[in-house]
Length: 159
Image 1 (spheres, rainbow, N blue to C red):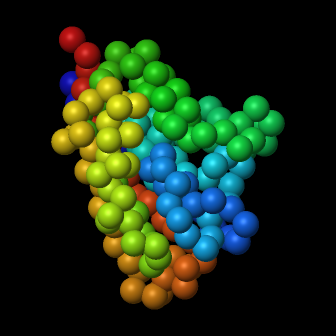
Image 2: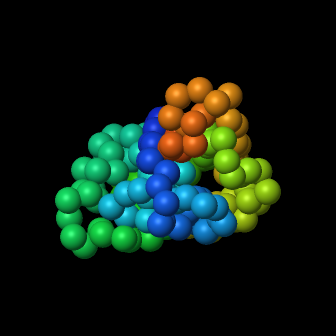
């Protein structure tokens, strides 16, 4: 049995924060604002996985009002989200995600992000598709005020 989940996340870009995306730090003048490390890519993937397994969303499991998650590494959130999916008897089929950001350039960092995500999700790197695009200078992402990520996850009932 196959199940598909969709994830979406957005965070504002602000000065004075590190830019953490896909589990790595990317040098940039601004970083993403959030209760955790604000890794918008990993958050969208968490939501896609949780949604596919009908486990609600990342905020339900890791509330942004809970002090234990303040500043947490989103790789831990992804690992825990996947643990919940596996507890329901599913394994990952694949992930497809698109990062929407004007700057910095994301493409040079995609192989490293794929490797990190694949390791956490116990899968082959070929099952982690990451893409990047701009918003053609429109809306908040286009004005470099935020980043947006859209993600889908396919999970398969473990035999």
